Image: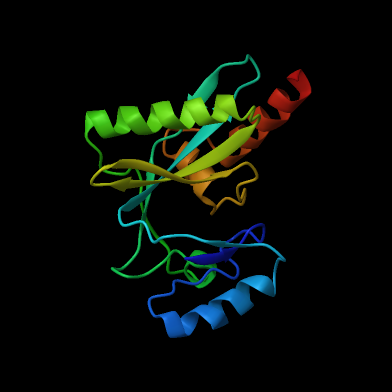
Length: 171
């Protein structure tokens, strides 16, 4: 996987399966940032967890959301914003997988000093969890992943935004 370090929304991300495609992938990433990550492809289910810091200092962990992509595909900009994104909400997990994901998400949220809301993206592989990224400024339209996660547990978009504002004011 080749991607710009700080472009966001998967802009400039390319999966490279053949060495001959590497130069074009690097050029696409470098068009958006002067720093590029080249990472090994991780095979597993992509599961996202959102953590919300509440005004009283407690945390609410949203239900896990699985991003469904066809074999060999990636969750790229076109899929994210082109209307073809597929999600399983909540992701189908056994109790141990859910506990490990929630614990890892909350641990990372606290260790990084996150506030407000963050979305922590993991790959669930046959050997365990792999942290893909911590998104400290996740999309916040009503159709974005984080609002969908909290809506699934009864927190409306308006209530989520209200919680975020109240938590910011309490800091």
